[in-house]
Image 1 (cartoon, rainbow, N blue to C red):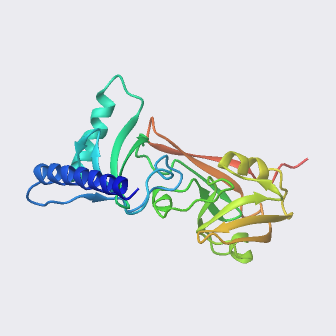
Image 2: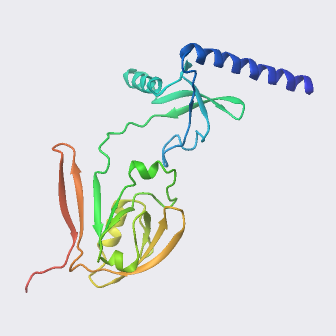
Image 3: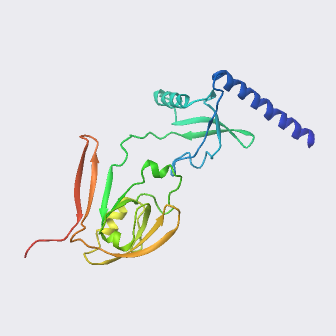
Length: 241
């Protein structure tokens, strides 16, 4: 058993020595290696990469800078025969590991839809929120980004940096489900809202909807003409019979 462990350890050290020489040859001046700082919450790499992993190679090619990663991703886009994955060689806890990581293409538009309900602005979690590494398990599509002074949200204490996960007992995993749950609520009706804070702590609060001053509306970004369009979802009917 000791002999087997000795040969296994020797094999690992020999492989590390080869990788070290390849990295030094790749960049003899800086002699650096990239380390995983963290993963975007909800990304495909979140369950594969860990904080502290050292990225040694991509598709068997040594990696020493961000430009190398960009070149590898661009080569993946230009290749007709690929499954949208990169073969990463990482170093974790003394072991060399190979992982297949899916690549996600982002359009760079950022936030393209926001909803104003009872004086709070909700949206899909933007990139900066995902970079913190936390999303609620109940669904991460209704993030409170802002609230207005004097609104029902302000008066009842529903502030920013929270996810709305339920409205009157109905789950709200995304913005469409949130709209369906809130458009059934009439003016002056009390609403029970379950939220989860950015620190992971849940709580339940009750507020009173005021459609007289705080209508429910949404803004959508149209990438074709680079314009925002507003649509009223719920408001008082001012028609006179």
